Image 1 (cartoon, rainbow, N blue to C red):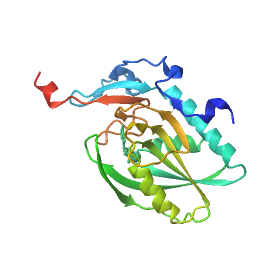
Image 2 (image 1 turned 135 degrees about the horizontal axis):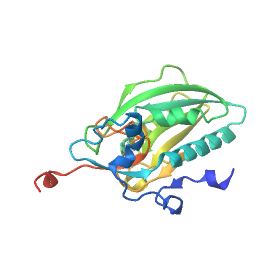
Image 3 (image 1 turned 45 degrees about the horizontal axis):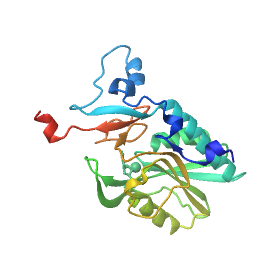
Length: 226
Ligand code: IMP
Ligand code: MG
């Protein structure tokens, strides 16, 4: 396994020092603005500020590397990707197209976060799988691993269904606030304790369409009184 693809990229490590540290929301939304043929687009909402953390090219490169790891780990076998809706849908769509194996897809939907940035601490299953996973090489695909509540819950209920193997692929890992002891087998980027949006990740259902992963700063009540 080549060393550059074996370890998760640290987005605040030297490889990413070239990232614009304090890019503006315009940079986050540049791709969108171009597509809108010059029309001005309402980029952020109620003073929320975005800054690029991981650029789209770095994401593409890393997703390809992770897909390569998966391809090498399951030579000649089929892998069954289970995406955790909704956040993982964009990561899964890019990842599966770079996997050079027989593949299949299913989705689960869970809810653990409300409109704000904190977890409710409870995971609820909103949509179960369409088909049986017994005997399959399952890869659970998630946007971000944070406290570990969501993935621990999903891992537990999936293991009860007797897959041949169960691996976890997370685009992002935010290890700073882990409550449960769980790690992903494939990690795109390890990030600091910031709330991020884009590339599938949302805040109150917005920003999933950003091509870069951006840090979102929401004004506090104090800010609005300044
Ligand atoms: P956990 O259960 O605390 O590990 O959180 C996993 C879920 O929380 C993810 O699937 C996301 O939906 C959500 N989440 C955690 N951190 C962030 C973030 O920084 N931005 C957006 N969603 C997040
Ligand atoms: Mg999620």
